[in-house]
Every structure is written in C-alpha cells, then in structure tokens.
Figure (spheres, rainbow, N blue to C red):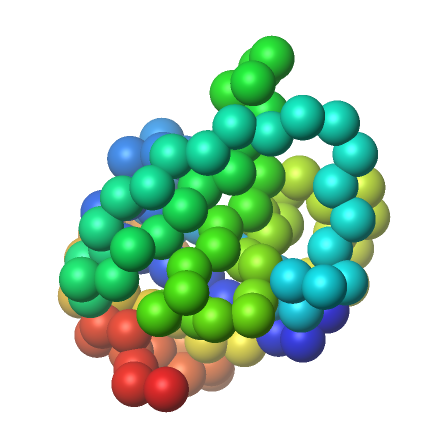
Length: 117
C-alpha cells in the first residue's frame, strides 16, 4: 500500500451510491487478483480515461487503473480489502463536489479537484 485517499468525483459518487469512495494506491505489479474481472472505461472529471475493474458475478467495483491519470498504479476500493483496518485517507480530491451530508477529516489536505502530478 502506497497511500490512501477519498474521492468525491461524480463517477465515484454514482458508482458507490454514496458521497465518495476511499481508494488505496498499489503498484499495479503488486496487485494479485484471483478470479475473473470485467472492465468499464470512462472519462474522468479531469478528462483522463479510467478503467473500472469489477466482479462479473456480483457487480462489485474492485479497483481502477488509468494510463494517464495514475500510470502504473491500481486504486483499490478500500471496502473490498480483506483487511482494511490500517486504511487511513491522507487526502481528499474533488472536494468541490462533496455533498453537504458527507463529511471528511478536516485535518488532512483537501483539493477542489485532482491535483497535478
């Protein structure tokens, strides 16, 4: 695990049915997936192609990949990890889209959009 963050982009809100998703960053080469996954590619709020990998049996979104937005990384949805007890978001992105009813830790950095780099 490299890092963890919360995202309030519209796709994260729509695909989770909540105000955000919490993702954990892993090197794509360290990710071990057992079983089949299906994919759906969409354009992010920042204009990058993002591929969502999900379980074809139950529809659970498992992780995201993207060649331009976060090359070489897999953003694993924290709720899908067998043990997510050590996940602590270190930043919030797309805070400008955060619904008023969804709260975040005010002590971590908040970015109105996705920061560059």
